[in-house]
Amino acid sequence: MFEALAGIGAAFGLSGSAGLNAYIPLLIVGVAARYPLNNPLIDLAEPYSLLSNPWIIFMLSILLIIEMLADKIPVVDSINDGIQTFIRPAAGAILFAGSANVITDISPIITLGAGLLTSGGVHATKSLARPIVTATTGGTGNWIVSILEDVVAFFVSIFALLIPIITGILVVIGLFFGVRTLRQRKKKKDIVFNS
Image (tube, rainbow, N blue to C red):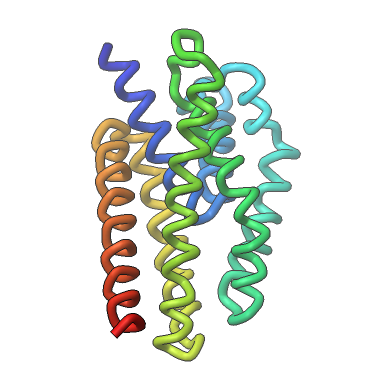
């Protein structure tokens, strides 16, 4: 029972961090499933074990560098977020299904859907918040926010592997409050425009 809860907690944490940066958790999971060679940190079921292939790890590293650079440049970051609208939820779905460790007990459709919704929700919240940052800072704050997002994605991914249940709960709570805050801001904005 504890192992199943830990797997689901890790799945929520990893898919949530994919909503901020798809390649950080994919790379961390790939490396953790590959090294140390005699006893990898995590065991991924097929076909998710492909993440531990050295060529996939190399490609994820290149994509991570491109993503990190593109996300720090005003205007380019908006284009990148548009492209990532498809990549981040897909990465979250893969991470959720691959790391749940209960994939044999739960339908793959449910785990893929849960990962898609979790990472998609985090990405949507990020995408709604980023224009506010751009507008309030004239674009100068985007790179700071992007660095913070990358740091959060890194640590959430690490914590999801090390202390999965707590991480899963925190991601769900953070997502709830993020959506709630954005809804409250939208209501205030609508009130101002309707006055």
